[in-house]
Structure formats: C-alpha cells, structure tokens
Image (cartoon, rainbow, N blue to C red; front, side, top):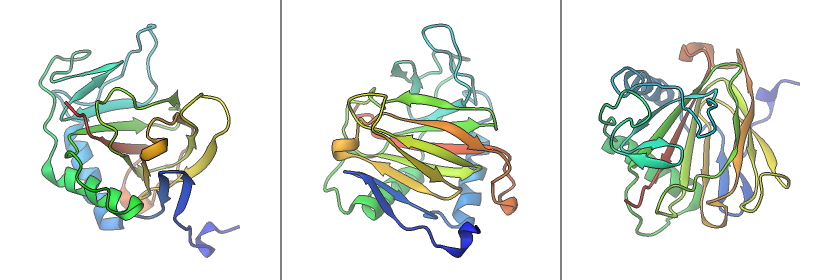
Length: 215
C-alpha cells in the first residue's frame, strides 16, 4: 500500500508526547542538514560515544551548547578531543520553542533551550531504551528527524519494558515529549536504509534532540 495515499495525522502517543508528521518542510530540512554537516566537522565534531561498561553506541554524536557524555554534561568534549563544545545557536532555540508551541500549546514561561544532541545513524545503528534524565529542567524534549525512516519506540517512565508504542519517524517529523512523559524510556530499534527523500541528499538518519539544561 502506498503510504502517500493517506496523510499521516498528528498523534498524542502518550500524555504530553506528540508526534507531528512532516513538521519541517523540504527547505527547512535542507537548511538543518547543512547546519548538521557543519557541526559534525572537528574540532568537537562527530564522535563515537563510549559507555561506562566499555561498549560503544552505534549512533555517532555531536553536541551543541553543553557536551553530553554518560551520564553528565561538560563545556568541553570530555570524552573526545577535549575541545570546547560548539555554541548553541539562537535560531535553533527558537525552532525548539516553536515546536513545543505547535505540539503542546503555550507552555508558559520556560528557560531557553541550550542543548542539542545530534545523532547520526547508519543502516545498522540502533539506540537502546533510555531516559533523558541528566538535565536539571523538566522542559519538554524536542526531537527532529532527517533522512532515513526509523522505528521510534516510546515507552513509559517506570520501565524499559512494555507498555510502549512504536512510531514511524520519517524525514521532517517532529516528536515532543514533556509533562508526565518527560522521563519516559525511548529508543530506536530499527532504521530503514534507503528511505530518505532523494532530494535531501542524505544517506542515513540524523536526529536532532533539543533540551533545556537547567544549568
């Protein structure tokens, strides 16, 4: 069945968690992709994240504003080349605020977004179930997708196991989670290679996650 025959609708996946398909248009996707390519260059560029147990994450990452490493934040790439973390641009913060307004309505006064985690997935990359719990703020998390489609598994705040919902995230999709779902476990069990829009010029998947540090 051709999925293009049936428009995808905005869905509240869980209380405070909203999927907005096609939120970024083609021009906005190209602009964001160009920025990601610039951010990925060294110093403080795309790196492989090593876990405390000695393993490595299969998705590679670059950070803006604050550098995340398991399980904390620093102003330098503490687990990489040691360079100062790249700055978080004002326009990206405004994009995050607009995303929250569109998905959840007016949240009232909130601190500005000041962290971006940019994860690059090739066809074999995955992300295990985890919570975004290293921030000192309960402001909603904003997730933007570029490139290949993925299966995004969104769970609950109590356990990595069921109940969870699998959501198909395509290029340009927005996913926002806050309120009672702010600390829900989530992950990416599958990427579908070759599904990126050909005009975008991206092989693989980029996920841009915006957070408020509270620091």
